[in-house]
Image (cartoon, rainbow, N blue to C red; front, side):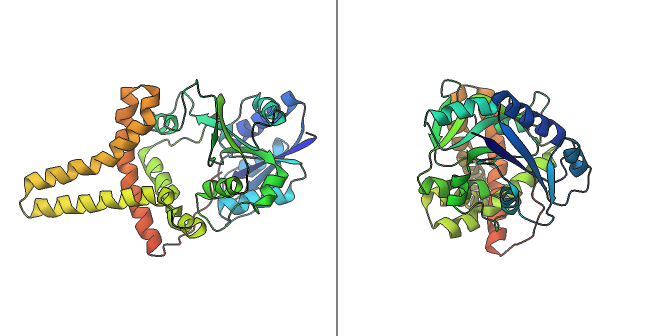
Amino acid sequence: MSRISIIFPMYNEARHIARTLLAAQHAADAAGIECELIVVDNGSTDQGAQIARQFGAHVLDMPGLFIGALRNCGAQAATGEWLAFVDADIEVPEDWLTHLLKLEEADVADVFSLDLHTPAQAPWYATAWQQRTLRPSRHTVQIVDWLPSANLLMRREWFEKVGGFNETLRTGEDKDFSLRQSAEGARLLSINENIALHWGYEMNWREWMGKEMWRQGSHLQLLRSHGISLRLLRFPLLSIAAWLLDFMAISALFNGYLHEAVIMLLLTTLPALVLSLRQSLKHRDIGLTLQLWGLHWVRLHLAGGAFILSLCRWNARRPARG
């Protein structure tokens, strides 16, 4: 491996970009790899771009684009035989590239991503929400159907083979991108032997709910791109069902049917409980189960709202967060 280009989409990440760039450079140095750091700035209003330049990054000013377009712009400017996409609030471990290169040389997989965790100071809801994606430590590597794009590593050919990221998606571009790679025969590997830290955790409830509303806005576009499937329909249908049960409970309550209203409200919690149990049983932590139960209940309602707004052709553009 002679050269790697590490691409960082960024929007107002002055708090984190220095840490992110230093960690990536240290990982490249530890692996003995020549690297270039490319920051694609989405019109930041803070000092992020200046800080990135101070740490040796090549900064591209690309305001007003969705996140997929930012990553594609970085790839077009890149000169490396390998491409890595790292969000501007992610701190990769020092042996990030050393470890993944060994896996690639062993022909284990084609596209790689590390699991994420939050720093110790993150609030409970951010930590619980991140922990739901972690697998038990005994499952250190696993071939998966799709990978999130907080950190991705691949040969350039696997980027070009699928034509890069979908530039029309507000969010969900990572699932779309890796699903297309998987369809072309790429082996996608998720790794938790090494953990990257997500410093851009939600610092308050408003931010958490805003991010989830934004993330859930891509379901309709994914269905249009990949066709109708139970896998892609499952969560939107669950979220709309939660809204319908809420409506039925309120109607029953206004009509004096208290018993029926209570039953309907209890039913709205069941999908969230199933999702919570599915993600938390592997950790054997009842506290995490209860936390995720509440978070999933809120998320289902946010997702239902986002899906309905998408059906109403809600196309509000929002800056892409790195």
